[in-house]
Length: 182
Image 1 (cartoon, rainbow, N blue to C red):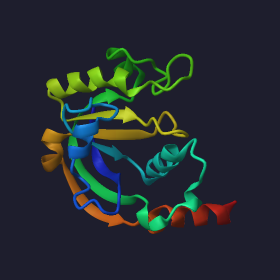
Image 2: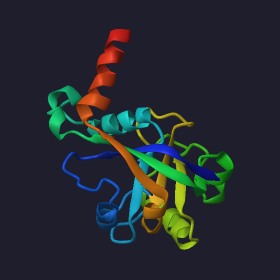
Image 3: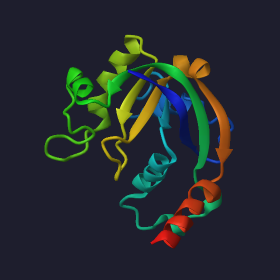
Image 4: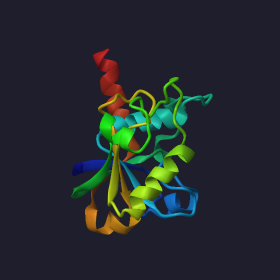
């Protein structure tokens, strides 16, 4: 499938280069095992980025309002050139790699873990596809909510940072507007 366009990435405020994939190469992620290759993990909408923040805090004894906004994630706006990506959005694409149509959940409703996704990412990297388009695994995301994972050998050619917004602007402003609408 072809994917690209406006995306975004969560980045800690102190990251000088938010498109750097060295951290994901070192520790791994959903589509890359630790020490293998780097992946630039992107959200396709700001709503998915918000869900990612809430997903990261799930189960913690504190809420987002308890944390200092100055140390929370910036929203980095990224333009991605249209490119081929492994289809892990459609039921047919998921079936082709052995994932259930219920992905990111298994047939029993449990999250599918990173270790099960690593061989799929490795095969796409070895193919060599430039990226993976997948359903978001963030808690609260719907079947139409997508993420884009761009492999490190392609980030310079495909991804360009176009902006960066502090947490207090992109997230807290949204929460305040959402509260007024309730």
